[in-house]
Length: 371
Picture 1 (cartoon, rainbow, N blue to C red):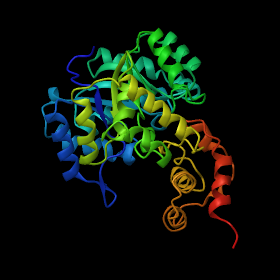
Picture 2 (cartoon, rainbow, N blue to C red):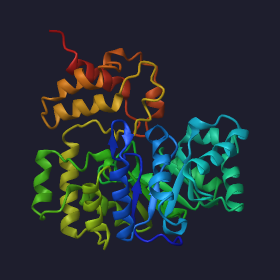
Picture 3 (cartoon, rainbow, N blue to C red):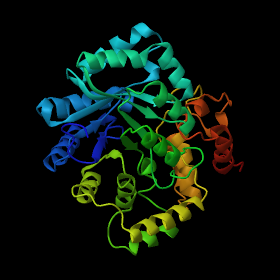
């Protein structure tokens, strides 16, 4: 489909191994070496990942250590980093310099939605990316997407030059009316666009399935919960790549064990996945993927995903340490849920279209009870 792309598992570099607030280069080097030694070569980043540390870590641990032809590097143009047409190309050039490369194999218009798309059109971002492709600085041009299938259809109709589409796709979101994974996938198929999958384990929530759901996977054998989620996504026709945000060598070895010689889910495994999905949905968990787009513009510096994780942990997993993490970790230097002024910036940035303001009230009601 695309030259030099070896296997379906991609290394998503948004959640790298960390030590003391910095990327753990020793662990990251081991992960990259293991990944490449097993025949994998696709790496995905963006300038905002880990506050810029993802790009520099890839430069130091991948680019400086391996020949350019041995890996595929994907980067993205994010709306936060340009406001005018003239700012697009300089930002792109800065990304090349930070990463230490002369070109990106894939360059995606990041987190496209109806609102972001309007900004990208106004600044001729798509046209400029296509110019950069003509110059050889981009090998393949695409988009990552967070909105309705209708908006995706509009973008792909207006820009048939798009070569690949990255969408959120997992077994919980497949029929979800907010995320519309299935519908977006079907639009990609309609337009003949290969699909890159992001969030196959839904920010890690499908790695740690609720107690009531574990039995369905345990009955199949000793494979990890992540294995079923990633293989579910990889098994659909037209799926070009499945990104996994691996943050330690153990996670990587697990992913490699079933993706090195990939086989789609069997009928029995697919039924187990459906049973787990039904069990998860019955738990009424907050469907937050911890992408953290919501936190950037929060005037009260509320660590929204962490607070949602606390509530999920308490409600679903009955984790009574959640109160400690809420009061002593996540709100010690950041705002509490009750500090929300309901400005709505978080909701406009949320790819999951969550009613964040309402949910923060639920969090406050649980964790900020009057003595």
